[in-house]
Length: 194
Figure 1 (cartoon, rainbow, N blue to C red):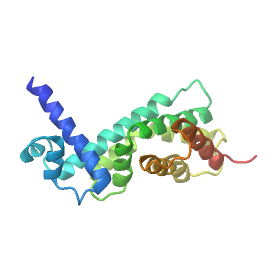
Figure 2 (figure 1 turned 180 degrees about the vertical axis):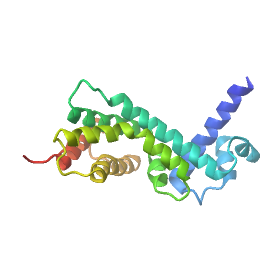
Figure 3 (figure 1 turned 90 degrees about the horizontal axis):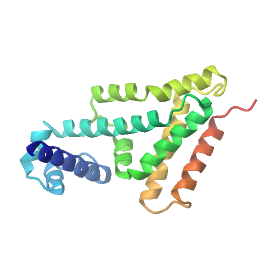
Figure 4 (figure 1 turned 30 degrees about the vertical axis):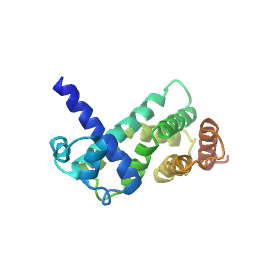
């Protein structure tokens, strides 16, 4: 029973932290506020996370694991690489629209000095499936002259703008149509004219 309560409190602390960090930022969010939002006493947070930075690393790793799972689930080796890349983009966008606060946290802290090098290294390993798809597309002549950084920028960064617009109610289309337009736009931006 206490294990269940412990996991419940840990989850409540992480959810409260994501909510507050994604709207207020790291430095503007005291641990006391996280504890209050989670409905636990002030000292409870430090039973689960040694420091505020440990909490951020745990959140960062958890969100990256979920996104990496979304990438892995979308890969279907039996279909063409181009379609796999498009499927991965769709799956990632679905996850992001379903988890906007986690997405905003991901965006905000991906380049933050508050994330440890260890956590950043784990991310590189987790997204190796997307890198594999990129390498296959290049080796098969599908993405001629497109370097990895341009591919990743086209794959990831427009998603964040869409989530920002979604959270403030400014999307012009419904989510499904937006996802399809985003996939098509990404591919048009990457595709090389023969």
